Amino acid sequence: MSKKTKLEAKNLNAFYGDFHALKDINIAMEEKNVTAFIGPSGCGKSTFLRTFNRMNDYIDGFRTEGEILMDNRDIYNKDIRVDELRKEVGMVFQKPNPFPKTIFENVVYGLRIQGIKKKDVLEEAAEHSLKQAALWDEVKDKLHKSALALSGGQQQRLCIARALAISPSVLLMDEPASALDPISTAKIEELIYKLKHDYTIVIVTHNMQQAGRVSDNTAFFYMGELVEYNKTKTMFTSPKDDRTQNYITGRFG
Ligand SMILES: Nc1ncnc2c1ncn2[C@@H]1O[C@H](COP(=O)(O)OP(=O)(O)OP(=O)(O)O)[C@@H](O)[C@H]1O
Image (cartoon, rainbow, N blue to C red; front, side):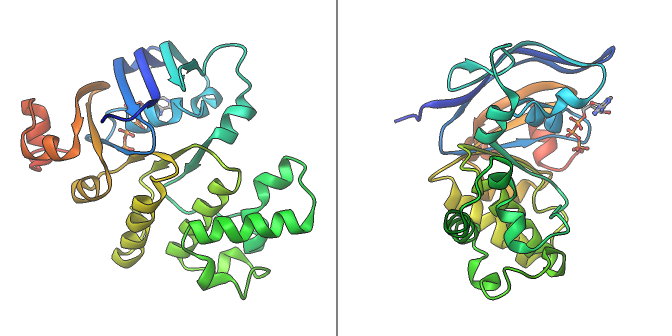
């Protein structure tokens, strides 16, 4: 049985000034599943990912045409509050970016911004999010030490815990493991596999094996177009388009 659609783009075009970065994208992504975005550098993967939390809004000259829907609501509608949207849509970046604060303060950062002050509520949320991010056991005895003293892989799991603490339903991940060693990468991949039971995950990756391991569905982008979108297994075993075939077999990219 196919799952409910969580995120959708309909006839989406996106521009940086005169540059046409996304061309007529149509896609429906399933709830509580992992969708991987793949494609050569500059094809628009990150631009597309960032439309789902409206992060491109900060870029001068950026504009979209068409629709981006979450739970069937157009997130670019003028009635949408971007701060509310960002509570629903967490994001993790390529390079771990913890704040120069304690581990605890990193995790509860978003909750403090929401005005939550009760110590027991914050403590419970921190423990829950760190457990979800598979970091609790490694940090439970040093919650009030600096996050910057953690390893890169731990910092990235901390950033995932920080994103989860505000209880989003969607997690956007822009090459979350590309700056990490193989063991930390494996941990992040395991984590993604677990988290998809509760979250809708979209991950940009340059690593074909990683897309194959973690994602249910894969979207291949090329020069701003969505060339092919299918179940990951099908895409990797019998791609329909020559460009997909060439990319996944390493002939370009
Ligand atoms: N802030 C910006 N201003 C102008 N052009 C931009 C901006 N950000 C991205 N672009 C352009 O939009 C296109 C898509 O970029 P994007 O970063 O989305 O690609 P990508 O597929 O994520 O690439 P990579 O895999 O290298 O991260 C590129 O041609 C890029 O130069």
